[in-house]
Image (cartoon, rainbow, N blue to C red; front, side, top):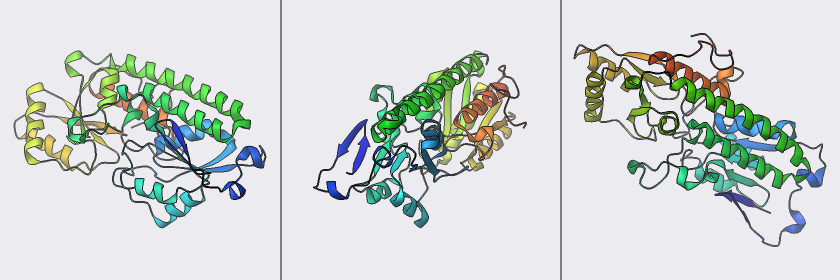
Length: 325
């Protein structure tokens, strides 16, 4: 039967369709793979980590793709229609895709917004988002661990005969994320206190700043749909000059134009600020690279930020795997 999991609950539609319900992997045989479709790379990565070889995982959004603005293609819809399970972040991250998830949901598909499994008390709700939570929850590794647990729980319910596989895979992934969380805390703490200011292209780093002890300023709001006004850019120029900020950051999935405007505005006031590096915010690095994994993405961000703001971080990151600049 159709299942749509939201806020950790699976809503079952019982419409007298038991005779033509698709088989679960357990019913079809433990050796049979099933198909999972995911959205952004961060979700894709943890789903692959938990599902292992039990499922084929198809990620719809590649490197450099902005999930706030992405519109599903005809092929995306075809893949969603054929999926057994769909995982996405939720919390309005994939704004233009939400309708498509509802359209393809049928009596055979499990649809799960993993971010909505997080305790509401741990979510940020900035005023500009009109009561909706900030969806960039992967920026706090401890919150993303909750999403790993949700993936494991949902897959175990969907395919109970493979429960041990999901449990073992999730345990390994959670242990790696605990190491990553510790690295982030210890590395950001090496930045001189007065320099722990993160200026970025859009407001994707609120959870990161909250978790690891930084002040954060951004040009655009939580969604890249919002436009930065001239006054706001001028205010950020004032902030950068007054606080003597020496490095600000561009993002791989967001236009660099506004950051360039701040650098030029500061230069006009005789203050030199440079680009401290490119950060991964709404998308990971290239597929097949370390930065193209969730761990590599966060490792890159932490290492880049610390190095640019006067902290201490190994050039090749937590695991010695970062690509040279």
